[in-house]
Length: 328
Image (cartoon, rainbow, N blue to C red; front, side):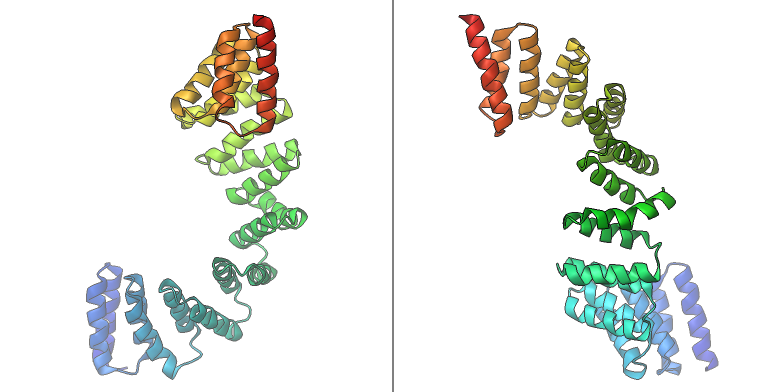
């Protein structure tokens, strides 16, 4: 390597480390004046353009490399990534596949390709790639999460659990796995398992409001109203304007015969969302139980005129018939 070329490469690297990409580009271009066929410089130049989101410039550099070194895997992958960013999806896939021929044991590349196929809605190819990724690297958590989610969406629940549960047990710091498992167990009414995984998800990601909310719902469905109350109160502290949390806390209070507290929570839910008609229904039940039939009828009618739920409307009709009989 020419001394001048080496000098400018050193200066370029120093500029990169200092975060001055434009200056680094200029030094690499100077280096190329002394070593125009140095493919490593062309590749580094492409990477800087890539980092600056100038994908067309990056591709010019990668192409320069690949003309002379068609098996330069990193350049192939970088070219694939740049094409993907430009929306040239088919070409990106072709390049990823080309890289896999050269590096068939590159597990992360199967993960990337699986994600690209998923974006194209080619679910079969996406699943195939994620499975190959996990065969090479069984602890690739994002691949396991994505594959498990796809099995969930396709109704293959046993396959989803088989993929996700062993990894969720080993990696409690990856909340998406625990959360999806909790959803599966919740839907199958395995409340013990659902609660376990909602807790794990929330512990790993205390900002995960959905995990805490669903944990509260799970406790309600399992009949553990004390824990449900605690979960919903905690959620309201996190998200005071959650109409859903106020509504379900009201349900818990109503179940525990704490009518004033329930009333307050249902009113709060409606204050936050005036179209929250289930809160009208629950208020109607509260008033009915207190034999305040006029107020109950008013709330039931607000709900009946606006909600499309046959089960709820049947209950409302029963209540209204009872109220009418009482008034007569």
